[in-house]
Amino acid sequence: MRPSSPRKGLAQHLLEGFLAFCLVAMVVMVFGNVVLRYAFDSGITVSEELSRFAFIWLVFIGAVVAMHEGSHLGVDTVVSRLPRGGKVFCLLLSELLILLCCAMFFWGTWRQHEVNATTTAQVTGISLIWVFGLGYFTSLGIALVSLRKLWRLATGRLSDDDLISVRESEEDLGDSPQGGSPMQPLTLEKRA
Image 1: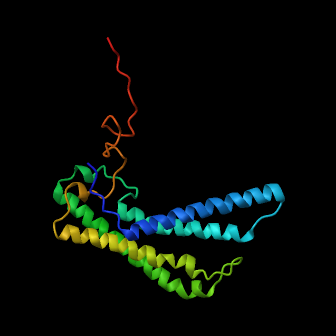
Image 2 (image 1 turned 90 degrees about the vertical axis):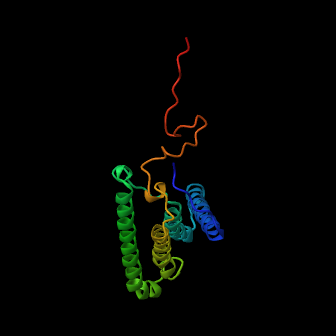
Image 3 (image 1 turned 60 degrees about the vertical axis):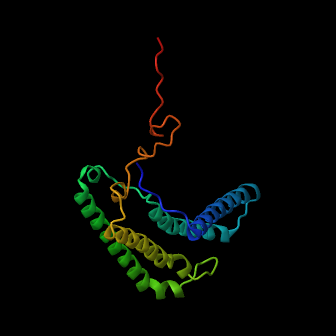
């Protein structure tokens, strides 16, 4: 059974919409540049830089969305076999490590803030704080998701399935028409 997924609120819909916009913008700018270079031996210089920025935004904002949905990669081989107390300990340890990483990420972004704010991109002239300043958003966003999970753990609102933060595969989804794993191959039965 899959852990209960959180309901999607307005903020998550807006973030997912922005991610879709970044992806479409990247495709249009890169494809458009390829066509212009191949067909007309020219290109739009700004589109190369903006597509790189869109990719960075896609990754950093997507990390927060993935953390909220619990869809980051991980290995649950050992944790899934532990008793509830072991699962609670592992979840607590992993969430505290995540918070430590978020604090380091925020601190690093803070230390580089002045450099990024005063440096501009070569082609567009955009201040690089609009690119690397996403470290603030990502570190705070992931930290909030982690703090929420720790709060749910402290108040006893996590089921045993929710104690395992990640899954190795989608074997527990059971969304296939046959009721099994969507990753299992179909087998043909011999009829007598």
